[in-house]
Length: 234
Length: 247
Image (cartoon, rainbow over all chains, first blue to last red):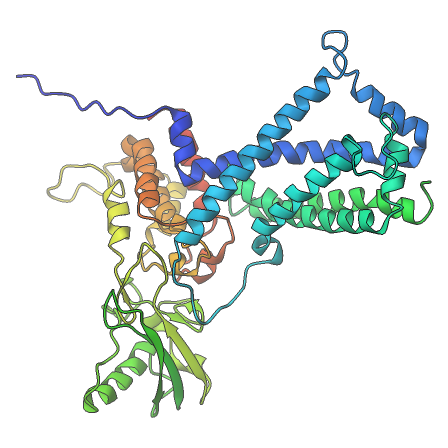
């Protein structure tokens, strides 16, 4: 008599990935890496502001012509925007679901509390919310121009200078750039661990890279408002 | 030595529980933390009160039965098990807070005793190798590279006390699960079930209601056996590899 073979039907890989905590963390790690890569190019592009309005506005115009003539005008930009939006949504939804789960895993807290994790680690969740709100303001300010004091389409240099000539523009931007630095400081290291890149020999290098990236990006982004405030950019 | 203890008292799973204050006198620095609690319990029994319930077994740091959160730290200020923690680490006249492990997957049974059978179910879903039992095999029947043997041994040291879960801000059992996954997946004997082991154990771990890992590293700072943080990263790698292979 033949024995029945055990045929377990497992759901598709993507479904299993999304259902498990490690899988959701993987989604967060990959989407975070996409956004981090974008931030590096964004920061480098921002520094064009120190070379004057022609260079900056010319660079902004060039961004719209990438891929031509294969791609239509602005298509590359829109593809990038769709990709980034997907990354933000995946990152946010996974973070929300994992956070709900994490909080439920400790229904009764300790009376004797000790916070011993680093500030960057403790502020990942609310820091992420602050960054999401910042992105909304930032798009309304410098992409669509709705809340920009200048708000002239195709003239990012003048719009940037207008934003950083206001106290609130500098404040919002400054807080957000510190938040992004803290987020990257823990996020980069954590993403590397999630993707399985961590090891006893490599963890020190990963932490150093995370701190370096956080510092370079925060300082690079803050250079623009500081430049406007000090009159280097006007 | 004289100490003021604030101990979590809870008569059963349904009781809301509360911290209660006790004074203990006549403690010597060489007493273990559990002996100090024994002293308190003898006094409580003499007074006709209910003694404090806590888990303990070998009292030599190898079984993983004991464990309580002392001043907010699982197993207290020394990186060891509660039974191997000695009173010399405390100052005379100090106030010490004692609480049970806190996690949804570790419901309180009574006072400082929690039900850790969720760990057993995680192990039961893959923390073994399928092999015929019988007489012990020849020690050199399966050659094991030295590096693999060392890695396996480092992770086999886990005694399943649950301090990692108690310390983790997310109540995550990743360090516990990864210790067993890395232990067995490092060895040739564990290779046939390499993929199903990690997939099944992680699935059970999630189903038991443990939180996710945010790589805070709190688990490794309290682990009495020194299971390293890289253990978690290795399990993540094994997990993603197994998913890719479609096991």
